[in-house]
Length: 298
Ligand SMILES: NC(=O)c1ccc[n+]([C@@H]2O[C@H](COP(=O)([O-])OP(=O)(O)OC[C@H]3O[C@@H](n4cnc5c(N)ncnc54)[C@H](OP(=O)(O)O)[C@@H]3O)[C@@H](O)[C@H]2O)c1
Image 1 (cartoon, rainbow, N blue to C red):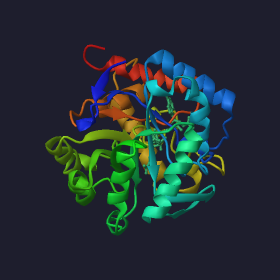
Image 2 (image 1 turned 30 degrees about the vertical axis):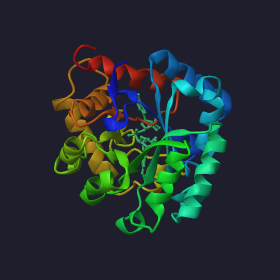
Image 3 (image 1 turned 135 degrees about the vertical axis):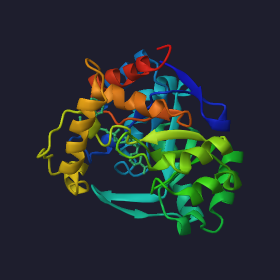
Image 4 (image 1 turned 30 degrees about the horizontal axis):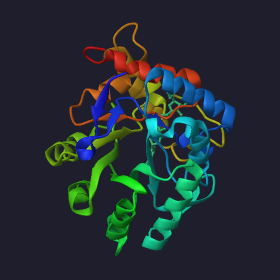
């Protein structure tokens, strides 16, 4: 594993982190504690120390499973969670962004994660109006002063959102999380250069294009009815998978696993600190961690 400093936070994070939206039950399967424990044992063995979760991956479900898995060595992990939504049922959440609601959510997150602090608390992909909610960032600064939050971040929704990116220093945020992968290079235009200029850490999310960049799906593929790719991503799916086939032929070196290649591709951009691929099995954790070997000196 390789490690990099996450912007100005001083946190040393593994270049391959662990995305955990999957634990919330919107990716075609449910997870139980023994399954998640085994995945975290593998992550430890591979040197992964960065976890990305959120308040609405299930109703704090993902956080609860993580809390169980890391209770014995919590201080060794960099735990990033988010605020801004209430989960009701799969594929149904509502925004909750007033200062009072955000503090309540933070308390719920801390309880679920079985910890008294989170390393990174991120604004969860809401619009510019919500970003400017009166008193929001002042309240978060108070939570930081109390020691419940070590650092603040912004997970931008639209991956060209330069407004929120540029506003990060003024609201006290040190990290941008953004969709960035071989199929979606929009952040290269403005967001990633601004992150470098402002010394913001960058977490590249959806680095496998929701699994499509693994190369294991062909045009015409379908997914279970409780899989986000069936519910929210039907549009242009075949077109995406045709593009993946072209990339597999023209860009992925012979003998290299395409998912690992796709993660290393993101990490070669000097603005990117870490990738946070979502994982569903011990094998995926192991394979994704090994993408670090494709980097120079790996
Ligand atoms: N707004 C936000 O802040 C936001 C939004 C989205 C995601 N996120 C975060 O970013 C993380 C990553 O994004 P994502 O999970 O949406 O997409 P992703 O990482 O691009 O894709 C994840 C999917 O890829 C497949 N996969 C993973 N490792 C693989 C491997 N080694 N080989 C083959 N297939 C593999 C798995 O699905 P199958 O095996 O079923 O194909 C997995 O569910 C999330 O887990 C979450 O923590 C944040």
